Image (tube, rainbow, N blue to C red; front, side, top):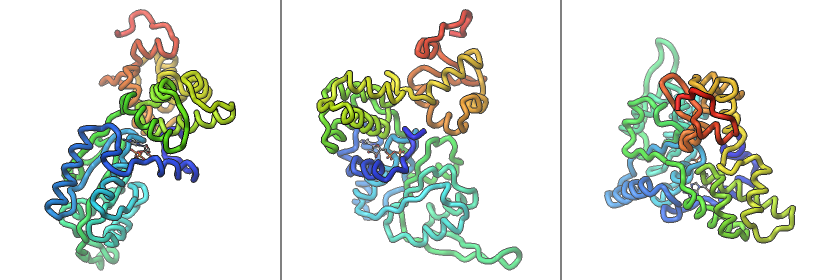
Amino acid sequence: RDIVQPTADPEERALEGALRPKTLGDFVGQERVREQLGLVLKAAQIRERTADHVLLSGPPGLGKTTLAMIVAQEMGAPLRITSGPAIQHSGDLAAILSSLVPGEILFLDEIHRMSRPAEEMLYMAMEDFRVDVIVGKGAGATSIPLELPPFTLVGATTRAGLLPGPLRDRFGFTGQLEFYSEAELELVLRRSALLIDLAVSGQGFSEIARRSRGTPRIANRLLRRVRDWALVHGVTNIEQSHAATALTMYEVDERGLDRLDRSVLLALIDKFGGGPVGLSTLAIAVGEETETVETVAEPYLVREGLLGRTPRGRVATPAAYAHVGRPLPEGHWS
Ligand code: ADP
């Protein structure tokens, strides 16, 4: 899943950092979230208070981390970045919270994967800016109240539905990020091409945008793959056909589906007669974690009308049969 997950490669990371928009004005798309978030920040500035806690949800690569950085930038506050899986014990969280400077923005990625005790500590921290630290064990354990500096939590999750209600309720603002339109992805690509000094034709941009799976992170990655391909083939002005050839070579099809997307559809059709089949069974069939199939592959397949969610399980739509080149069986539910 290298295509959508954050990369470990330092050069790519540096480039990803350079391509990140730094202000709300530079942030492409997500009109509603941008406007509402802008208002939350403005109001906080007028009241000279820290901004309300913000929850951002949506599939990976849509701009949650970028927005957290923008919140810090717009508030003129420092940013601390951590993630749910990095917080094993409530003590880890207490250490982070008590070392924040007043007004600091705390970005907590994958907040749905935090441990239960840490989550409970977070409730109180968010509400009252204090925590109770437990010292000692067993009958001798005592709880010591600890005042915290005021801070703004920006939580990110691939699925808001996974968050317990009490946690969700403590966010003053919740922004649900949506997949980007092709036109928006073209804007992202044009800006990135300018920054990495790459010449691409209008049709070339459309071709890459169309294959970017509605996701800016993927758009930027595909742009770099196309750049590599062009470099090796001595192409200086990238046309539509170049982009198409390069991306087909990287197994990104004309609709933006990658290998995992296609193997999900093929398993659904070839192994389970088009469904309905349970998500975890489907995940086992393609050799992936259930969460990966659910949060990475599925949202885009649903949006593209290739996969349906029914109470009895996942089903392949007629469009899915057509896309992977399988005949629609007689008596298909459609
Ligand atoms: P997430 O945290 O949701 O996984 P990120 O915020 O890390 O996603 O975004 C991934 C990359 O996509 C960033 O490096 C950034 O360059 C680009 N990106 C995301 N959203 C936008 C946007 N709205 N406009 C331009 N670039 C974006």
